[in-house]
Length: 237
Image (cartoon, rainbow, N blue to C red; front, side, top):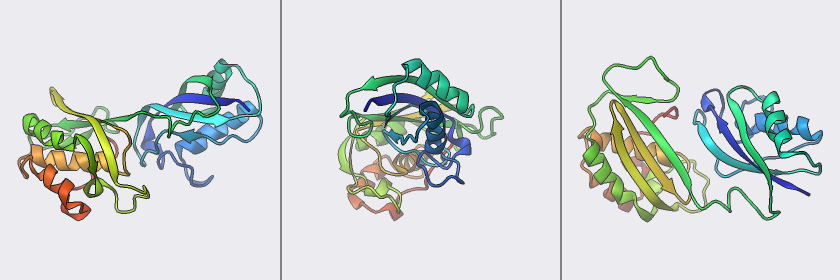
């Protein structure tokens, strides 16, 4: 049975995350499976490299599915997009090896969190930026972020209801940079825990605003206590 890999982009604003919950709840997986099922003329179940929270967007989400029918790669792309809402797009499709798995074959995941750092809200892209009115010191945020590098227990940065079996993750790269009023927090890791990026962002924003020192990040990693960390940054960033 052929296994097809996809690259998918979506605006998560109107969805309750990636994972299918029911036919009544709008999720990215639900919409994608509906569209692919129409192309295949049989039920399709899609797996992805990593589930996203409600309201979170994706530009290069990797997914795959098995199908008993053969279709040209173009049909999986163009046909699916015909049946998908405008907020979801299949960008690429190709047959892959039978043992390919988007989750376990992945070498890394990357998230970029966008912050509009200004005392006045912007009318542009409100669903893609989180506003932080406090002036942010990017240098100290970058200093603090380096404590995240390497393999650590990220219990202090995971959601209370996170279902991951282990809180240990390996951060391969983290970078905080500014372009005008836009601050980017760019993190690459082997995998992420639920809310991990948003919790890291909440901590770094407090550090950047001068509420906490850069060393607070190191202390939180050692404490392994979510209640001692900062707020969870909003999903739209």
